[in-house]
Length: 245
Image 1 (cartoon, rainbow, N blue to C red):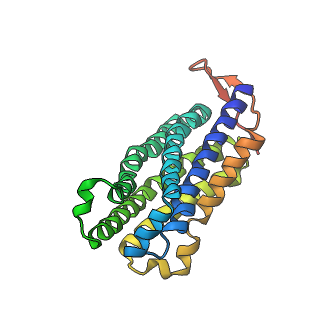
Image 2: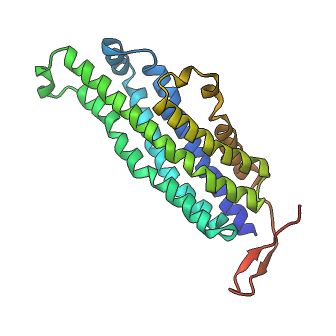
Image 3: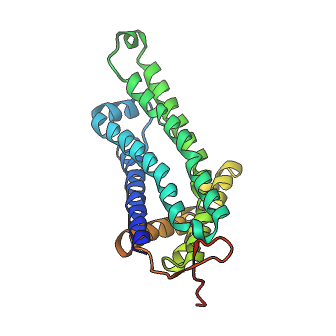
């Protein structure tokens, strides 16, 4: 079982990279540079904080790379507790990664629009501002689409964590609740124009936040719980012993 502990801590480390990269690229950098700005103010803010803007792109790419590896490591840990659900977990998580990388092109386009290439000199002052605004709007629309995948993978992941008892089961429940929170938030924002004004909108993804950060820290610091393994008489492969409590 020491192998499982190592795998669990590796998963925790990858999850930490995902969490920190996500906070940097989706919250810290946009709030510092883009929040409440448009047009000329937005362009001026990006130009004066270009190093921070580039850092946000790098943080996002690192985050998505770690998110590609994370479900593969979790699969090794959790497949004995339900292979179909483990496959669904990997499929739903990894399906988002190519789109996430492609979506980052919109932020790279912003750097191109604000560069010093000679062909850009022919643009009027208003044109780069409009194109930068549209590029960032397209980026955030892409992030909105991605949230449906970021929510759906939590259901099989949470179910497997709950069933395995490798970490406290409350985290599995929070992850599964987080899946439904993401789905409700996605369709709420899509179908109800003023959904963001509802009190529910501010808390609907809180279970996912608590479940993911809690799971990340528990795997990294505490590791997975030791569980005895017995041979499966049909396959002769070791399977986890089911506990009564």
